[in-house]
Image (cartoon, rainbow, N blue to C red):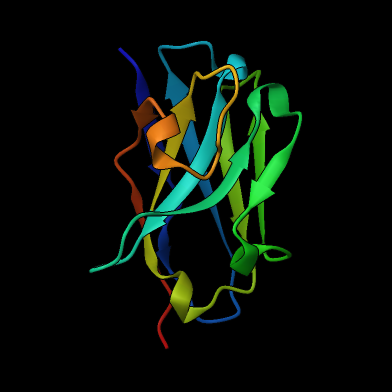
Length: 125
């Protein structure tokens, strides 16, 4: 019943931009903290960005601050990640996730209840 479906990934040259989207269904989207994570081959999944429930605050991985922007549209049950000035080290599968916790450590994968299938972002070096 619960679904998170990412889209918008692709191949882009360094310095380019992509906008990822996550379509959510099956739960009360606005009451969930939403996050973006990424995983490159041979590396652990890492936190990228999060939007607190109701969109009250945002948090970013240090290396993406100033380049990535997370946003949410609670009326449309969608989450976005605008990625600008992409770098080769941004290459990874990007997944969105949802947390129902009343207080969430947004960078921790264990805090999230639902996960999408991921979308590939490739930035050649």
